[in-house]
Length: 199
Image (cartoon, rainbow, N blue to C red):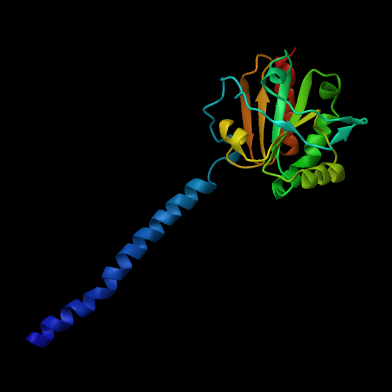
């Protein structure tokens, strides 16, 4: 009788270990399904409709355009009656390289060339030399580049990770936000939305 009672727990013990593993696996599947379902670029932002955070950015030292230093930008520059597209980028960011041709095309568009829409960059947690090399190799579509080396400004803006792109209205309020690399379609939509704000 003692042998039977000693054997019973031994038969049930594999299930005791399997149940937590099964539960963990089910939770992992639920998490992954949530992660990959829907459009990642549609992450909600609590800042939509609110003024763009006033942050202090420095210029990207040594970055020149037409023989002049490319300036940084601040809140005052975002509320000058023009729509502004702010792109958060870094040289070490692979998706930033993927989206960059679309930003260059955006910078060459008549809307930006005519000054109706302004395209600026926020360089995130980057080395100045690497950022200059990145823009030198791929082209600089930005009229201003603010450096956020410590990443504090990005936190204020609610950045999840680079790249991210914000649309700022003529009144300095955040109108739209795109998380992740821009595509040709999403870049065109954002540019059209920006142009509609200043008609």
